[in-house]
Length: 418
Image 1 (cartoon, one colour):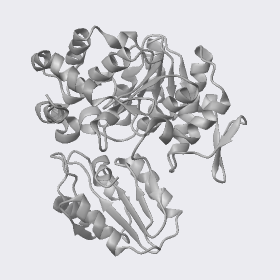
Image 2 (image 1 turned 180 degrees about the horizontal axis):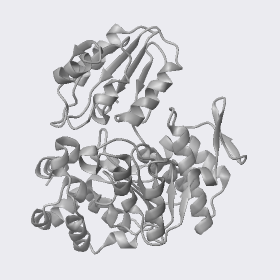
Image 3 (image 1 turned 90 degrees about the horizontal axis):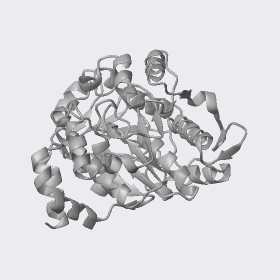
Image 4 (image 1 turned 90 degrees about the vertical axis):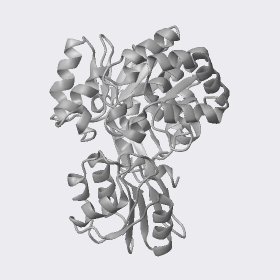
């Protein structure tokens, strides 16, 4: 098989959540465990840090990885979804998994894969474990896909678990309350494995406390290990050091705090990380890890922000930031997926903005006409476009250098303009 044929096989033959939604979500770990056994259980040979949460888990995954890379370690990074290249999901430091590795893996195990019938995500997780083990990484930072308890990544026995925060998302699968969602995320807490929680929340505190107690796991809130405050264009952690954050945006302050707390606790376990290395890491997350799609803001002839905010918490933070900005006219290129509950989300958007309703090129995308109809009930007016490219080009054409153009609502919309 050529690499192109392998990609076609992965995308078309296996159910893929990002494309088709909940029907691709396997509510048990059986197939992942079967794949791991087929490969000789490489996940058992890895030193893993497991990262879950509603928002920020991708950023935190890459921030923690960056801290370890800057300290001289070889670090596997598993994250999802990808924006442009399937190989974004599986990296060592800032290098994607080779195409030849993926091709040979599929060729070697194709018959067994068709017997096991894994989802796209389950198979990709297995490829990552196999690659990281064969490459002898020092650490593997593993980001969950959806939830935690039944997520395919939850076959690992990590040295540290991290849960960023809990917000409203994927309620059709994870539950219709923050407590229920927290129970799913808390599923990554393992017996006697410490867990760092990024945000202390009244609705979820008892869930994490009880799970940690039952698991005999040390529970650490990031606030108890460190504080982060903004000083002009810098962030200061405790009184130890300040840095100019490489990843910016209204939510990254919390993500840096969570990541520093996780790295600090790893230091308490057995590592020797220096603050100078962490400072360098936090100022160079993109260069060290190749992270994409998080708060890409450019000023110039056009002021454009690409942001992967797609749920209530993320959109609220984005809109709070917008209120602090100066601009003449606000333009939104907006698209969502079908299974997203939009009632509370659309209610947040300003009526004064101009809207360019669109749909990503995936089966799971909510049609732009349907989005425009739903938005009109909240007096959000604009034009619908069948492609992200046409929506984005019209927003650029209609904006001036004094305006602000925002692209958000779906990671897959951002992926088409990144």
